[in-house]
Length: 260
DNA sequence: ATGGTTGTGGAACAA
Image (cartoon, rainbow, N blue to C red; front, side, top):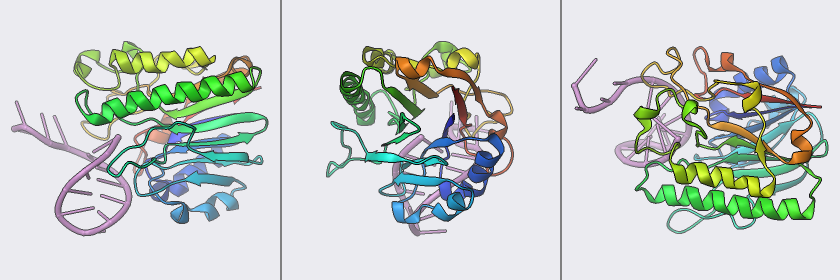
C-alpha cells in the first residue's frame, strides 16, 4: 500500500493538482490537512472520477482534514477522545480524522500551529499533543499488535537539522523543547517516526515568502508515526518535492510512505 | 526596506 500525507492548503484551490498527484504517484491512500472548507464544500466529484472515495471533516474555512482512498474506508471518526477545544465559546476544531483502510488505522492530523511561545495557541498545541498521546495509549492498549499510522502536519521540527537555520528560529515555535518533548512522548504509545531514515536532510514545507523554496530554506514538519507492527512493514518513503514547484503549489510537499 | 506570499471571503486573520 502506498500511503501519503499532504497539507494541501485549500483543497478547492488545488483539487486538480491533488487528483493529478494521486494518479501520477500511484498513491492508494492520501491523508490531507488544511482542506479549508466545510463538508458540504468538499469537491468529492473530482476524487470519485479518479476512483477515490473521501471522508472529510471540516467545520469552517479553517483547518479541515480528510482521507482519500481507492480502498474501502471503514470506522470513520472525526476527532479523538479528549481532544482539546479552542476559542470562545470553546469548540472542537477539525484537526483529526481517522479511518481503517486495508487493515491500517490511519489518522490524518493537523496539529495546532502554536503561533508564538507566549500565545494561548501554544498552550493549546501542547495540550492537544498531550491529549493525542493519551488517546494513542488507549489505542495501543486495546490492540497492541495493531497497524496504526498517525500522519500529517505536526507543526514541529523534531531536530535542529529539520530547519534551514536554527538560529533564525530562536524563541520561535516549531523548534521549542516542550513541543519536541510532546512529540517524542508519543513513543510511550509505541509510535515511531518512519520517514526520516528514507529521507535524510529533506524538508516538507517551504514558506511562500522570501524565496524560501528556490533557496531550499524549508522545514521538516510533516511526519508519519506508526505502531511497531506497521513500522516493520515500511519499505520506503520520499518527499515529492516537485509538487512544491510552479504556480498554484501548496506550501507543503506530499510525504509518501510505502508499506509492504 | 523592520517587508517579502497565499488562502478565505470580501476586512482581517491565519499560516
